[in-house]
Amino acid sequence: MIITPNTEELEELLRAAAYNNAAWCAAVSRGGSFTAQAWSSPRRTPLYYPDAVTLTRDTDAAALLAGIDTGAPHASVKDSFAALDLAPAGFEVLFGAQWIHRPASAPGAAPALEWSRISGPAELEAWETAWDGEESTGLFHPGLLDGAAEGTEGTAGTAAEGAGEIAFLAGRDTEGRILAGAAVNRTGEVVGISNVFSADGTPDDEAWTGALTLTASLWPGLALVGYESGDDLDTALRHGFTAIGPLRVWIHPG
Image (cartoon, rainbow, N blue to C red):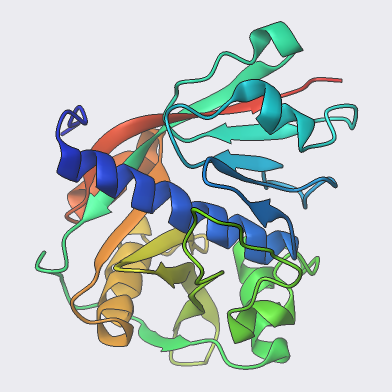
């Protein structure tokens, strides 16, 4: 089910989801800065991560683009409210998705794998290898295990909690192999879930079941947020999430 955000409560939830995702992007990118309207990085961010994330519907596009390196190949912006028109600046829509929300009270199923929180750089490397399907590239750096966004600067009008708390979750078989996983980060009263994956032969539902169960034990009583599209959105909806509003990612092809 897709809900059009037409109430103050839903709008606040969208802003919380956008901020949570921006904090995660800041942590992975090891920097950038927050204003009341957006998070942005003046230097190119790692692969798969945007150079800016909007935090409000009325983000000033010109000011936003002035804070990132638009001359770099594939500079990108996460338009959290699908409200910007960056085409005049040479950007194209890369993809669209839906923000999702799951209340803390939503029922869950029992996972089949043994789920635990990643601890230490060696385990994180093994987690990333399973996530990638081939190798670890160092995208998820050990600093993330401390829940810190290195170099991130807060400014007036934004929450002062930085990256909040971060955890990498892994589902293992009886031989200890990581067959499923997810990344979660807490900011305020929500926990963001992203990078949900299952190894070949492992049902996608197991990744969501296990990650949701473990997250509930780490942060009991907190709602979950994130974003998905396509088949991944359908899977999330099966696990108690509701789609609450659209987002877009813009990319500069140059």
